[in-house]
Length: 181
Ligand SMILES: Nc1ncnc2c1ncn2[C@@H]1O[C@H](COP(=O)(O)OP(=O)(O)O)[C@@H](O)[C@H]1O
Ligand SMILES: O=C(O)C1=C[C@@H](OP(=O)(O)O)[C@@H](O)[C@H](O)C1
Ligand SMILES: [Mg+2]
Image 1 (cartoon, rainbow, N blue to C red):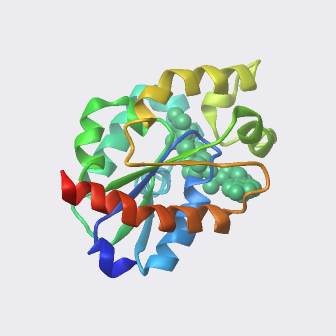
Image 2 (image 1 turned 90 degrees about the horizontal axis):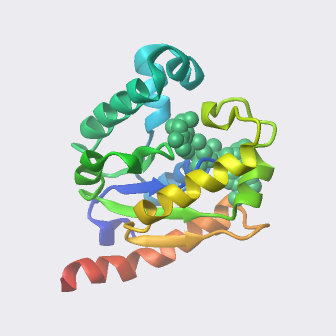
């Protein structure tokens, strides 16, 4: 598989809680790729948590850092990159994402919520109605996530390994599409 990919980067996009970070790490291992998580790079570079950055710089400040990291990361090859759920919001980011193959991890809001109900590290979910917030973010972002090359829908009970396997199975099909265009 990794020879088929010829070093092309894989970008995982999708809502918070779909498992981009978890599955991305597994995929990288399977492919013999490096693994990068844009949130992790931002936290390392600034010495601040995502919560602190949202509180101190606002969402706009965080989005600028996210674009800066993406623009740097896309200069490298042989990477699996777990992005933050909102990376799709800025048009300029798509120019970077399209340097590689883009995989949309998609899951029902109920499943996402069950995974993140106790989580305190997603500032956008600090809302009186976190499930409603997830629903409205998903509605707003679906047309953007739909621009991915591969769409993987998760079902309850799918393990990260199952999802990584389905992504690997989907890659040959999207590579063929890229060649035939
Ligand atoms: N397939 C899965 N099944 C069960 N729990 C999962 C699965 N994928 C991720 N998780 C859990 O859900 C939470 C969010 O996962 P994470 O990888 O951080 O998602 P993202 O990076 O998309 O926000 C974590 O607690 C993680 O352990
Ligand atoms: O959906 C979003 O806007 C965000 C998702 C988070 O990353 P994950 O998708 O890895 O949770 C993180 O970047 C930040 O809290 C904002
Ligand atoms: Mg993540």
